[in-house]
Length: 192
Image (cartoon, rainbow, N blue to C red; front, side):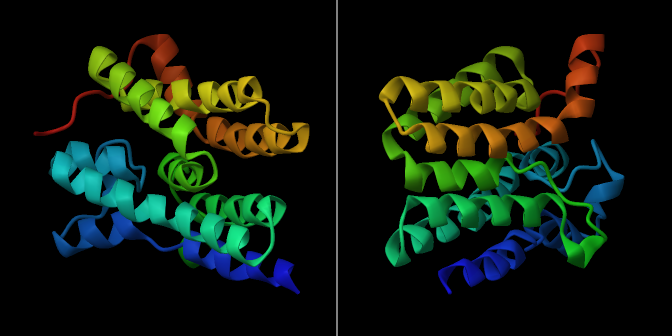
């Protein structure tokens, strides 16, 4: 019965925080900047404080399922619920399966599932972001760094595989960003 919670976790993931915030300002976020309904595009369009707000809201979409999964059952259910929420964020049935890239949602979950390592990943994200001025490169760094750090910590193999699977999906959603990074045309620097 606990696995029925995957459905509400998915629908929590579909909550369109970036779309709603942009709409409140009379903007369709999918038609400006990178077109991605996520924190980085909001920050570039409206400023850092709005980007942080979307990051926190999207992070809660991962943190809440992770916490519920741990409280009700175990880590396996928590990771399954996180995967459902990330998929909901990326492929929301409410918006024709056109969503964000899942970094903040996975990040929020990580702070519940691996809090100490997540502080380190946040530091890595900030270092790469402010050094390169590219949020996408910072996101790619933590998507690779997180499963490695969990493995070094000695987590069970299934947990490492679960993180690699979810992060792999996030990396796939960054395909266009990776192409732009290779070509040197990736968007950078948000408003203040």
